[in-house]
Length: 330
Image (cartoon, rainbow, N blue to C red):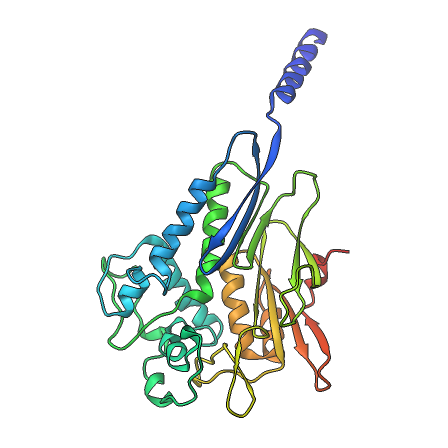
């Protein structure tokens, strides 16, 4: 028994000593009109940059409105196409999230975004809302898994920017997980998902920006820790135009009215099991306003919200759901 026990102990020690030392790789660069930063722990010599860049390029070729021959651009021109699995999943989830949020998240607002001028970097105050609203409503676009080909109803267009980055984050996280990587941080355009810990053993920490127009680094309203959860933040404090009356017109368009929202909600940060869900919910909350948004997020399982508002005096206040404190870094 002693010899057998000694043999087992020796084998365990050999197994431990042969385990490769992990190093933290970080890949960064431009992506989807913004930037990406991905860190993951792997044995020395392994680098997935090319694979990650390939996924990012693939997502652009499918979903970007800035790529003239992307699948979404072709759909918006009235083409009938064969959908990729990624875009099919994004469209199906978009339809599901439109129902979940009672229409406050809707990818068919593309004609409104274009007409208001936000996609061109300008502002148009004179548009025919009633006419455009006849082409808004995710319930009118078909299930992407129903037929072998896909098209949009005549006059309809989609803008999946409110969900594409979250989907991309989940896609890259899935790529890493399938390769046995359990410690990683994936961030694309501010949407992030984390698993495990850093090489130091510390948990992944994510900062939520202070709602200022200055993009100064390190100006965080709060910091959270994440493990096997995602975080997405939506905000209007840097995305607006000033109309001829001197009023700020924000980029969040209410799919139910066709008009930009008027609200004291500056940003909404959502923690959820997936980045695509957090992304969609964050967008929807900016439409709802803080009261409806906080109660809505409170009703969802495994989802928490952090809402920054400007009170009547112009001071910053914070509203959170009941479980948010468990994620805050102390």
